[in-house]
Length: 303
Length: 280
Image (cartoon, rainbow over all chains, first blue to last red; front, side, top):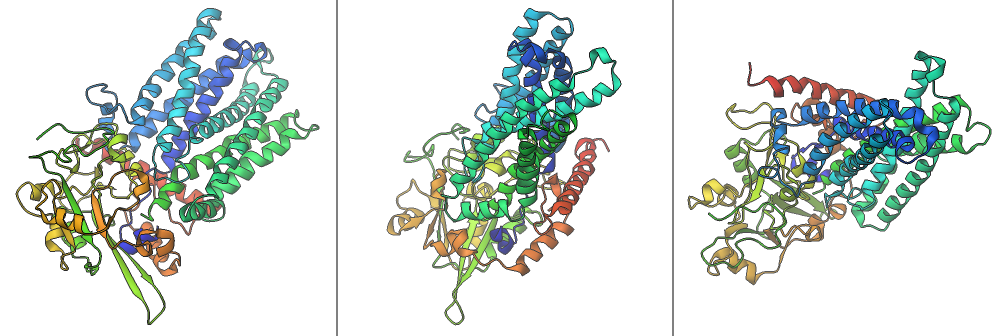
């Protein structure tokens, strides 16, 4: 950043909070859709009651995404430039792949939701497989958009899309748990989701948390072997300007405290604690999206 | 005019081809005085908005008085042979001209800023909503274009023309008789961030780690300069464009919330201007 200051060229961070929110929304959508397909596609029968709600929640979250993305463009009316394959758009740009995914993913989800509603096992399964692949691709591509920038130090790592997907999985389940609990207040006892099922989903979330911490550990372990820039980045992300989104919000609030809550045998099936852990996970992942998007743009200013 | 190059190409499309130009620049840092004439003339010629630059100067001072030295480094778009910005541009708005220029098409750009994220040299900037001349493009990415408008008419780029020390040498690398070829062959030249694999076409003579290595050059952070940066970010509409503005002294929890709210405010404030500008 000193380079910018001294040169009087105050180039700003290019993508900001709206894009971080977009990553978070797409992630939560993909995560909740993965849970939705557990019952109908992967044959885990006990998750079937959540399928319809989770799929609809994923659709609703994904409806906000194009609004944010299009408004964030400098020229919103030119968004169709992204969709004019193969003559106009540029195949090598990850953003083009993402445009295809973002368009097709909600359509797949809508058909899946319809067949789940009709209790059509066969077609729900077929479209579930299709839509869950699209869900993973949609979020994979957000990681790739960030990853394929060779000069962005922490982001240019092959672990980036996996880290994004893990964050998506964790935040999706967290948000789904909270919304299922809210839904339980408004529906009759017959269609309520039992708190045991919510605790089971929190158990799934726990695996995601452990894997997420493992990936972050790998990511930052690698940076300790870097050059000066990596060290500056590591220090300032952990303790400098980005300590709040990264260290406190993501690591402590979003991963470590829920991990502790969910591994204590006495409380890890109590509804209050499970919901608290879910809330912390869902909000904590937003911290990851913030630092992942903005921190490396902040440091790029060296050059 | 040959075909434009959009993707990962490998070599400069005109490298070694007779009859084709391959424009490049050599900057002799031993002759650069850091006078900023290039910055000023470029900003004037192209209406580069406040806070952004097509060419700019990095400065770093080393040593203790009286044994001090000021290193200067003019920075501009490196017109790379394997440009990350072109690979990542989703709409082919930016492309490699066969003669070596990396150019931007404003009518095609959607303003997604992927190119700016991809550029390892920070050479791209965003044109804000408010321009001094309203006929100029806005809300699209922009960059140094090696003054293609001047070069195709037989003039040197304006930074080269205005260089007071004669430090910047521009010309056709395919022509062995040109000054730039001669200087390039006779001197040891360096490029910035060669490890990024972008094959930059701006070469420096006398580049050393005191200026090229940011960790070395800017190890001692100046509180005064940071205050200036933050003041600029707080007060400038340009710095706040596109909701990605960070004030680095305000990154506590409440500061983060404050910045998020402020960024969203600019995000929603800009939205109607971007969407309905043609209508009223």
